Amino acid sequence: MDILLTNDDGVHAPGLRALEAVLAAEHTVTIVAPDRERTAIGHAITLHQPLRAERVCENGGSPAFAVNGTPADCVKLALLDLLGRTPDLVISGLNRGANVGVNINYSGTVAAAREAALRGIPAIAASIASGAPYPPRQAASFVARLVARLSLRRLPPRTLLNVNFPAVPWEEIAGVRPSRQGLTLFAEYVEKRLDPRRQPYYWQGADTQDFEDDPEVDGAALRRRFITVTPISCDATDYRLLAELGSWDLGPPADG
Image 1: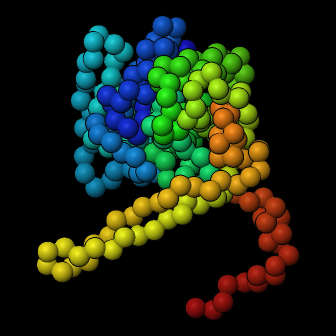
Image 2: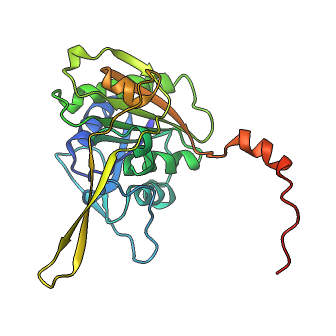
């Protein structure tokens, strides 16, 4: 397969390079990734400054470009210019830190995969929970097996797979669990400080997430030592409410 690799941790991140090392043995791999850390950038794109892509070489590996933009920028630039072709698959990761629950909405890792899915290209986002004691190559080998499955079974249009690996020794992983996205928020806070001129500034932070207890939810399954695989659709329409809206008698728009 012809595979585009990207991430939000940067072009030299160990997780991305582990994926490259495993996948390049059987597939054509090209890397287009941010030139620096872009964690929690979401699906932002760059519109008010030029994008630049610099060719980078690392031990004679796969072709790689470092882009001064976001993960979504990287996918756009790769598909519209740098690759010169449409890849069979886009993989974003391996991210340092899990992307489950509402964090999916903030994740640059997931956004890069979503950008590909929006354009009709099958995509995978893959992340390893913080503190995992195993090398990323083991998770990369699992992703390679998933890629082999996708060569036989196509994803539905505009759908991606979000894969997360638990932070336990590899031999203690309980299995693989298809999961739905949870909706639990982090215990968030804002810390207010004063600069030397007595002007306020803020640090955002979050404490450990208390995941829902439903074993079918991604965060809960991850906590139970499962590798989670969550299908995510680009269509965010609430079809149940859409069907009800016709009975709301919203009427014509009010006069100006």
